Amino acid sequence: MPRNFFLIAGLSLLLAACGRFTAPEPQRSPARVTPAPPLSTIAVSLTIPESEIAGLLNAKTKNSLADMRGRPVKCGIGWCHLDLLAHRTGPIAVEASGDALSLRVPFDVEAQMAAPGFLSMLRATAQGQGEADARTAFDIAPDWQLRSATTGTIHVENSHLRIGPLVTNLADMLNDNQDLLSRPLWRLVDKQLAAMRIRPQVEKAWAALAKPIRVSKMPTSWLVLRPQGVRIARPLAANGAVAMSLGLDVRGYVVTADTPPANVIAPLPPPGKMERPSDRFVVAVPVLLPYDEAARLAMASLAKRPPRIAGTAVRFTSLAFLPSGDDVVLAARFCVDPDWDIFGWFASCGAGYLRGTPHFDAARGTIRVTGVHYDIATAGLVLTTMRVLAGDRLGEALSGHLVFDESKEIARLHADIARALATPQGRNVTVSAAITSYGMPTLTWTKDGFLVVFFAEGRVKAALHLERA
Image (cartoon, rainbow, N blue to C red):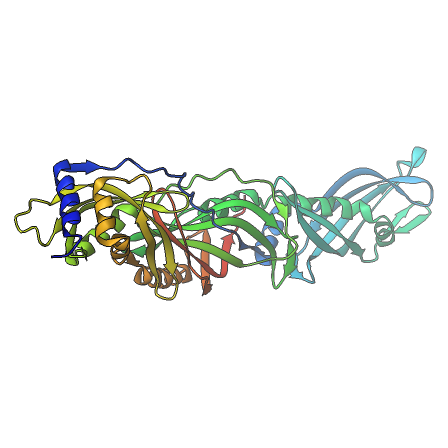
């Protein structure tokens, strides 16, 4: 008979006499917080086709381009007074190229000029035809107002005005006084272009990006983008449209939930400046193993392969994970039943605490709790007995059951996210993305469970279909 049999039997007898035991609750540091996803920029393209701009300008200039009365002009005999009415004779041609918007406006002009002072009864009329050539550059104001600055020249064919002995050329007079016709014309153009309101459309993009996108069905998972800010590059005219590049700064993460998670966003902020467009993005994808699920998996493993240590069966009846800042605590209820105790006289059950440190094996995609050992506050008789029986082998035996395979879940999310983002989402605002790589997963543990986070990197674009106000 082994020399320590009587010691073991004696300790076990004392343990049995205790019936059921509960170790004091261990000390824990605050649980870790869920890390914030990185800030990413989603490139949003907003275009205004030149045909839409032409349609707007033509619709707003049906009646007249300019109508002025009694405008003083220098006429060789002093300051004459000019009445002028200009009408468009053909459609306004709009071309978006060369980083600006080019406009060609054909028109005719009717003019009546009165001599100055006591000669005002002397009047003359003339008609002429001409063309306005203009270029428009754009900018965005802090209030999201589209600003345009139109400049150009007016060309009028020869048309003579005769007032008594004075003969003057209407074309020369208008060409020498460009602002007579150009100022009201350019003001008209800028006013109509400003009617193409940008803010309501950007607000749609701001809100649309915050709408959760379902990326998986089993379990149901959602990609949530939370807008943080918006930047804009100076609008450019090229390739038949006025194009604006916006950069929406977002934090993206994946949430597992049966219904779309709430995503409350702030009002649209004023635009910041963007030096160059960017379509790079990074989305944090968390794979959460809740503590309850981890405990269930561990208990299923323990039920299949109960630990046997030094001829003693250890049967776990419950297991729970308690998060702590530097490790996790395992609250265990278990029974000790020596093999030689054929009558069950020395069997006893109780509760104790062990501690371990979670690790993630990136190569295998598994979460492991290693270094399982007794908590210092767990000085109950059962654990003292187990030290005598098996030293720290209880913790070692338990560690083999605290292995959780998340590789299939990670691989599934890789495929689901790539497939979901490749399909354009939305109507007025369409969002699509191409995943280019996945970062190395990392592990943390929070108040809710073990959290494996990997980063999906790629290129994403959103197209905003502008509506005229």
